[in-house]
Image (tube, rainbow, N blue to C red; front, side, top):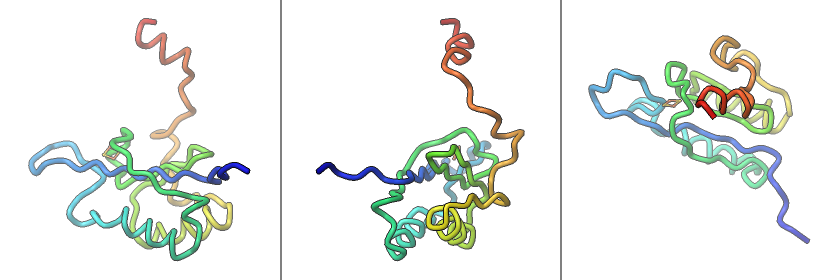
Length: 124
Ligand code: FES
């Protein structure tokens, strides 16, 4: 018997920027504990094995940070707070329903780019 796959992977951007950097980043002194908050909540709900959280670097949606991507589904949640994370875990991870009001706007999260288009863009 193998090791079961998770149902979801939760990718949390953990990029921070040095003071004075003009570009925003997802992790600031005000929200630096959101990763630990999310991990603790997943453990308390008993879903960490089925929905592990993974630290990532920038996912290029810094203006909307803090952000988190849930796979499968390519669901990008933005402007995260503890209250939003509570709802995302309850409704999306446990309930299976995307929390639409926290999903990134379509103009900032268009359809996935194909591998062929990416290669073409890079001259391959
Ligand atoms: S710093 Fe988080 S998406 Fe860029």
